[in-house]
Length: 167
Image 1 (cartoon, helix red, strand yellow):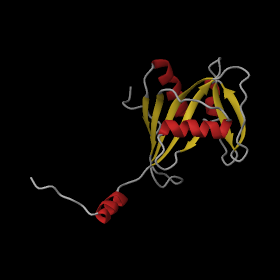
Image 2: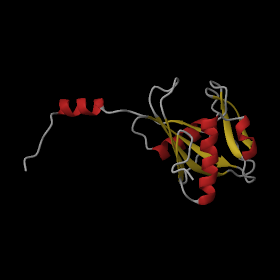
Image 3: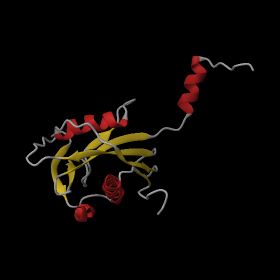
Image 4: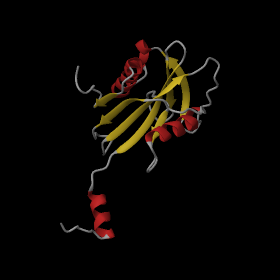
């Protein structure tokens, strides 16, 4: 059978024609009481998990560690993947977004958190019962799925905020 070869230009055009997605990674960090560490960006009206946008070619677990270090000053080695969430394009997002939530572990009492002043204005530990007061529905769904995945020992796939397959 004859093999087909492509020029560099043909290969470049083909890759450029493929659909693209954006990616972000965050850490689910809790205290000894099981409360979730949330951060308040200064450029949004809502709270979120520590984490952020992946850099070009950056593996999600490395992006998670980098973002946590940059945002709150903690050097972590992300644990298991808890949630893989997908969000379709909407008015704010022109492309689909893939979110990775890793287990960031339990923080020891008295651990210093240093906020990245350029991006964050506050942090706090929040009881699971109060998450809806801080988070928009899609992020709340990710955090709740992360807590459930941590307890079950199995990652959750969450397209558009809904567990798949549906229970």
